[in-house]
Length: 85
Image (cartoon, rainbow, N blue to C red):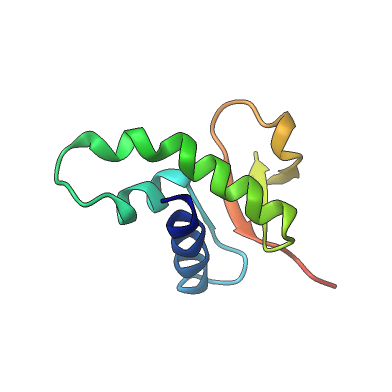
């Protein structure tokens, strides 16, 4: 499931502007196959998927518009494509 979340995060970002961000809930909702609030159970797996993508250099986790270290993030986060020089 978490590999699917990683792929979904990358696909969602690909469909948006280069500087756009998504919420982990966007990926959780996209992967969840029900029509109730069951996607909420995928929030922590989506956050873990985002952290792995940070380690791979694919994305950044942001808070208040600024990149943060994944382990330092507390509360709501956003995910955006990594900015390569």
